[in-house]
Image (tube, rainbow, N blue to C red; front, top):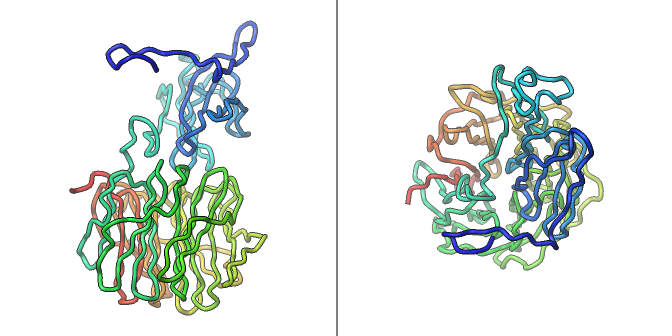
Length: 432
């Protein structure tokens, strides 16, 4: 961009120019869409008559997109914060041509989702492009971000006034303190703690400077050490340890190199002190384990093969049982039990999932267990705030409204040693 706002101009930078070869005759490889990759600030999506490309702004190189994404006549491409892609492909050129193909060569009745896959068709529609209003990129930069609030016993406290926060995670330590991670896209990850007597730190501490983190998890072990995990899509997961009453270390250790992971959770076995890192991606949900001494296993265990999992949460109980919760991209919630050495073969569906008008669609979830003998599942439901279900070992009850704040966009849950349940939210349209 050149010139002042009153007379803007464009100047081509030859060093960054890539020419997409044009085919001869009809059906030339014309460009249809250029879009930001909302999970990677250095990458763009480009669609043409024939292909879908990625463009790396650092290396200045084009590359064909992966199978399932790369196809012809894609009129638009857009990515959700989870990494799921949205495409529109002209009906005339679909594998099974759609009805809109008889109208013209650019419209479609169908919007396609990729990783996880789903297609949504509206008969009679003439869609051209479909866009995500991203929480991480572009002029919509303040959408899907907000200030952070903590609620306990009906009292809500604003614990972080930064309106740019996009993700939160929390844990409770054996000393009665509560620890919260806040993720600010483009800035990094920050930490803030609440004392055992109820006072919150007035300022947050930056734990990680990476601008590409999209998800974080935190767990406290029985010794009071804190374990923080950060996810960089397409690259892997990093782990850092804060010993009890010490500062966060400057460096972190890469503990997983999976490139398909979109959501993470962590839980510590209360007896053996072994860490379990749960990784959700296109390959389902996997468990990577570390010993009490901090040695990570080379192999991972596949816990769930469902490729449509959008968010995960985990908790432990004093009896040594581990609990994994998943929500699919379409709102179905499942609960799976495990031990330090393995997970159950099947999961049970938790009532209140799916798309039910009375309870909305589940968009995120958090779980709290230790030090109590009950599990609290807190779900974030589109437009309806937070809902809670408590499990004591029998069947799950139906969800009950916990916090109806309609602007809530993220959730955490932590059960403290005084038996109080703390829930946290990012509120997009935050009160002062």
